[in-house]
Image (tube, rainbow, N blue to C red; front, top):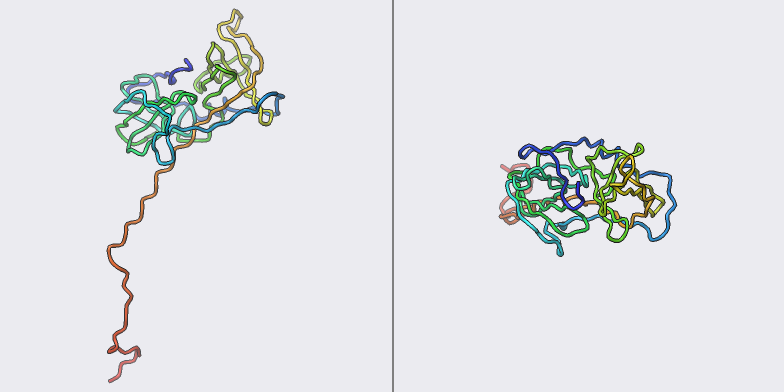
Length: 249
């Protein structure tokens, strides 16, 4: 998978693939104990293209519009959001996607470091899928200036017993697990296409400068209570009415 596109999967029509959530858990552990690191601490950021009211945030740009979408709950990339497919996208699943304030309208973002989204009009409400869950791996990372990495939760490739976790720019890949030394994260980076038996050459453990997680969609606003159309009446007792419960003949 190229880090610059939505994850390409085999899908039939509008049916989205179903990967077991356990795959994210197996691939997703951040290893402990701590691994020594130096330099600035890893900046962990939680991002979403929509605000709490479901409106597109300032600075985000819609690059295209797609319709007749079919969306499922549970993003493979972030866990917290959803994912959609459309006739225009074909076998490419748009993941992750967030519902907006407009009914059955979603915005899908391919990379957390670029504020570009695809607007999808769904043919119906969200249905099926594994459901939203807590992510164990970041959606994307920046290793150093100009080197960005995007999560590949569907990869089955392994190297020295470790799963491939991220595809990065500049023909680099990250094999797990990530290591955490308090506020410092490091990733084992490999150069792909090397003239080695495995096709990879280790570039060593490198510091993770930024780690992006996707935010959960904002809950829909609670409906406002309907205003009362009748004034509140306080019963009064007429002077001619007796307050004595015993009738007088």
